[in-house]
Image (cartoon, rainbow, N blue to C red):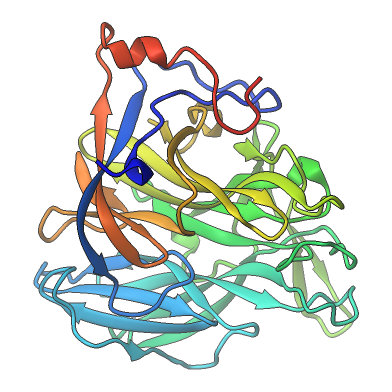
Length: 377
């Protein structure tokens, strides 16, 4: 097996992190080399898959440079040529469609957009935010439903960060089993270290058609709603609380010495074999977003953000935007997978990812007691 696919089966414990749930038998993940395949279009974000109501067609949405394409076919590996989606009115700052959820014959999409900060004088960096959209023609045309989450912190105009001077984005969403809440796991790039990392918010699914101001952000054990204000023209603006990160940054995205230590870009799925939610994460070591590695965390419950396990390293280095593609016909997507799934980075896959439960007597279990990875002491 190539060394680049060897998995570090060691639990990574970060001293500055909140107390993670203690799992008696934590799962682990292994990468298995496989024939190389790619998504139908180039990608620099997460790439959602969604099945038709009758299970006969699957659509995949890929995004690059703020433009979204969609392709469809009878399987995820036999889709046609991608075509650009149309917008009734395109969102400012472009759109990277990171997640799509079907509700009968309507698709709800959730996009990352990148606007310039009103606080900074054209510093060449952006301030990402998260928006929602709706399609009634199977994803060919989208209606923008507005911004559903943005940072309340001012941007850091003189940041050495190569891309962002603040904001939130690079995210993934998942609907809970009861279709009661939509959960948004997102990256925060604000100037304060306390707010940086991977955080979580949720919205009642009943609010999906009017989502502006509907997200509540998890902060210090509570789901805190947005607050509204009205300007002189009668327009409503929403201010969202800063989240308490599930996976907090240990070194700032804006460190003057160029060294960072932060997780970002989560992708989440429900694993039918583990009966748990699985989150794949990028981990950066610099403000230029050099990839230190890819990690995985597990949780049985979306409504308990403190239950996520400490991240375990899956791969050193690697590309951005790790995600799975489930292999079960008519159900496998980036949001549902079984024991084995395709493992993608930046739209390319040359490996399967296999999930295992560790028996109590496993030698791997004994090895997992040490510390490793970023922040280990």
